[in-house]
Image 1 (tube, rainbow, N blue to C red):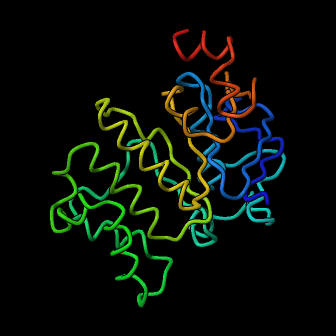
Image 2 (image 1 turned 180 degrees about the vertical axis):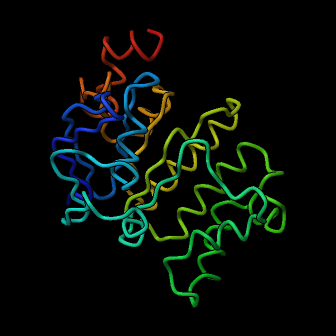
Length: 235
């Protein structure tokens, strides 16, 4: 079943045509990744799906509903959560307060159970639940950003550059978390510059170049592609 279907997305920054007529889909239970060089339009695509930007044409269907003109906070309520590039946690709040902010779309009755579920997935956050979020390491902040998104019970979790700025060992940890979420049935749309890691977790992938989708296939197919190896995998 298609959770997300994007058709003929065209996005402009003033006179700059940033996204040029792209179409793609995400099925329930999949990890789909968008890879490409910096400036290819990957983050702009996610921001448009989540309602922060608008496409001039086409449609964005989420769970069968056209959300092209729905305000971003209403899109979260419908079950689409984004972990933004740069994490964007509330630095002056505690870890637990950040997680509670992620649950604003949920009834208060279930928040404690949801907190315990996130703490079971991220034991490090439980250890630091009273700690001010701005004092966490980069990897811990990324875990917190993902945990905060999970508090909204997303039908689709969108991750924007989750490995950015992290040491290699922490990148491995973050991708282990993505694999575990996938195993638990979470549907994920992943934007990532680390093409090798992204393709290793992806059921399907799309390559973006200058606002267009130029290649698509399974993660394994694109990882084995000479074109992708040359451009993105150092092959």
